[in-house]
Image (cartoon, rainbow, N blue to C red; front, side, top):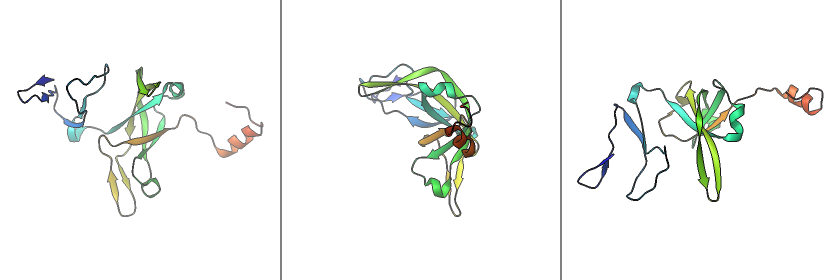
Length: 158
């Protein structure tokens, strides 16, 4: 970043692409180490992924390749359904998120989407960079019969 004569900061990237997230910055604003101030992609040639964060307690349950279901915030799931994807990357390091007096340790998970559109009978919604999503990650498959038998102690827990 460098300051120009108009007292605005100019962000210089080392690669071509499109900016889809930019954090509004003001003089004196403190930043955390490794906090992103902007994100960009390769434009139309880039593959859309979802960036989600999981709690440290859930980290041991996840594996690369786990199936995921993503709901786009504000989109009727009953009408349009969910986006499918797979876990492509799980960060090695953690991120600390402070909420009031509590601090939460999170891992970043990158999910590669199988498709980037949701369709109903007459409409289509295209997923775009920076759209908020809610991710459900499948880490164990269980059918109802096994679950009922397990509850009745006919099957041992896995």
